[in-house]
Image (spheres, rainbow, N blue to C red):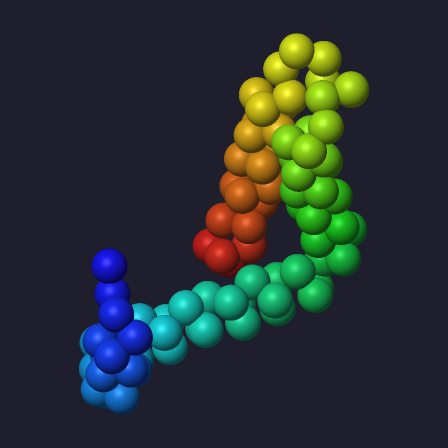
Length: 88
């Protein structure tokens, strides 16, 4: 368990490796935003599928006896859609 003191020390200490990783993630995020902004229908489809996956995980009335299986399946499809956006 990390104490508050250790957390503050790690926050204060500057780590170039962590900064480079954060910059890479920001670049990938901007790349995804650019991809999604050029393709609004794809954006809507991926995020709707994500919402359906979350909905299946929250309720079982539509999925019957397998809500987790259906929810995870839709979330995986949405995740693959985001990977497609990151690759471009």
